[in-house]
Amino acid sequence: MGLTIAIPTYDRNQKLVSLLHRLRPQIVANVSIVVIDNFSPTPVSITLAEQPELAELPLFVYRNEANIGISANIIRSFELSQGTWVWLLGDDDDILPDAVSNILASISNIETNVCAINFSTGLLDYTLKAPRTQDVRLDGRNFSQSLDCFANFLFIAANVLRRDYLLPYMASTLGYLGSGTHIIPSLYRAIYDANLTIILSSLRICNYSPKKGGNDWSKEFEVLFYDGLDCIPDYSDRRAIARKIARWHSPVGPRRMSRWIFISQDYGLVFANLKATSYVSIPRCVLLMLLVIVESTVNTLTGELFRNMVKHRSDRYIYTPFVRGKRPRD
Image (cartoon, rainbow, N blue to C red; front, side, top):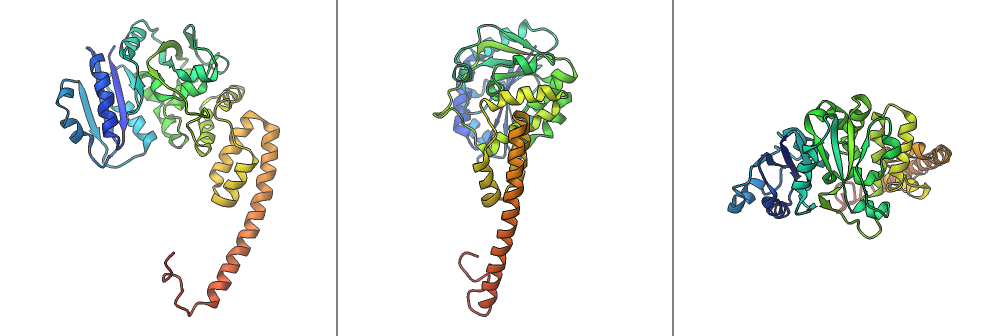
């Protein structure tokens, strides 16, 4: 069974070159590399042409005709891969010297119904304070209870995926591109609808050390991680997995919600946060909903008052040189 290392990239050509140099001594028969350039200012192919020592690699480079966004480029990387198994790898990921050999050893002895392997990383040490000591098999019956760390599941370079098993469910992933969960919705569908299996492996293929404070994601992005739970048919399983997500990526509280209402007026994030909170705590969600109703009403009234004040002021000075279009800020 062949392995494709798929690397989506944008405007980090030198990081990509460094990664390819680290991969070079690990490449053996039945292993290929696919790079998908997301319309970088300097095409990746030009940069790689200046690296003759990489010419021996089984390397295929594709360039998008426009920047399609990071999530869509990840999916495109998966689709353009040719191997039975795909290792999606970020251009800045820190891979281990025996990563490829560990992957090949794992997939060579795999059961036929396995659609993904989630390898261990430093996220487990940080969140669980203990590494995995043995492999665990997950399916639709035990996934919500036995998934040990959603953050490690979300880390794209920790997953090696069975391409032919997951391609039929890519439509689910495309429906949640904005959630930042890349291929995870398709994994939900695969284990719940097709009774496939995910293995949580004790082996490691890359390093991951969380930044100080323990989180690399913004809250504006984290609340979207819960969207893909719609792909899980059982509501009790959705809530159980949501609580695992919340250990690392918790929904926001009233203070940040108020900022989204009064300052950014981003009601998309507000409602995404209400949905995430409803999975974690229904009473808390009800309180936040009341807050949204009150603050939205206040925001509407004060906003209308402010707009009337601005209109009145602009009407007074309509014949002065400071009409709209002539001021520097316009």
